[in-house]
Length: 105
Image (cartoon, rainbow, N blue to C red; front, side, top):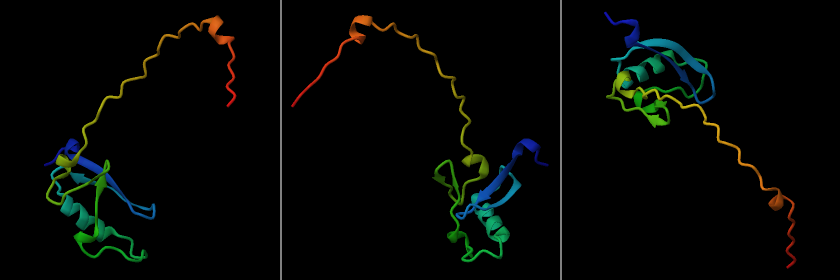
């Protein structure tokens, strides 16, 4: 039996901004199976819904997912974001600060 860690909760965002889900899927689920799930859950009241897997493109992190890949293979690695480093403030030279310059062409 799959553990909770092997489950991924996925929400599908449609082009009009509405959502399908969230729903949990095992990490071994293929993208093709996800597409079938999207087609089955597509809101009936929406016009021009997909009828085949070829009508659906799943995009994650800016990449189009391939049908033969599993969810586990498609997961993006989680990166640690480093906190910003404060730079030392340089003292402004007062003599340079008071200068003015004009150019007339």
